[in-house]
Image (cartoon, rainbow, N blue to C red; front, side, top):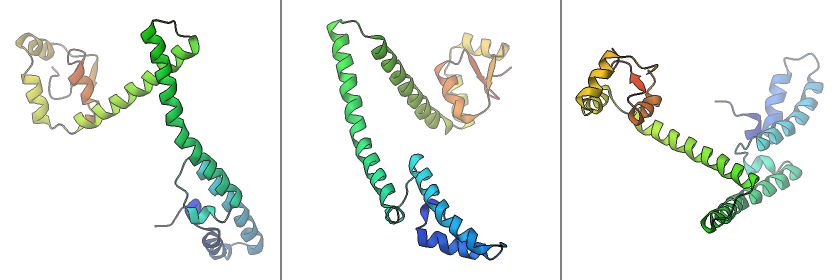
Length: 181
């Protein structure tokens, strides 16, 4: 499998470029441009948070410094986040009113927490087999089962990743082949 440009050292990238340049009308110009482009690929990968190998970064001292700065900043972020949350929670415990920015911050944080919880539930319940789903359905009371069999829900779940929705609220959702009429 061919490596991505940002995974290769400058020397490896230029070797690849020389091989490819033989097919071009002006190979020298292609090789020169390839050298400039490599640094752009590496910088882009760093901005995207890709795991650029250190041996690649050693070819570009300015990018290496940028990477080190980013690593320091990453290690400080969780501490700042925890400190801010604890300050806000202390205000809540004291009964003080939160500022608009603090409410917005907590709202964003709770959205992230809920999203992570949904992803975890989705992974957990996506592994359920049809028999296990039928067993869960069988545990529901008689009235609920008869309603499910008579009436089709607005949302019918077909993807295993969405089974958690049905587990949480079986009256709102139907799973195809389990409780659909």
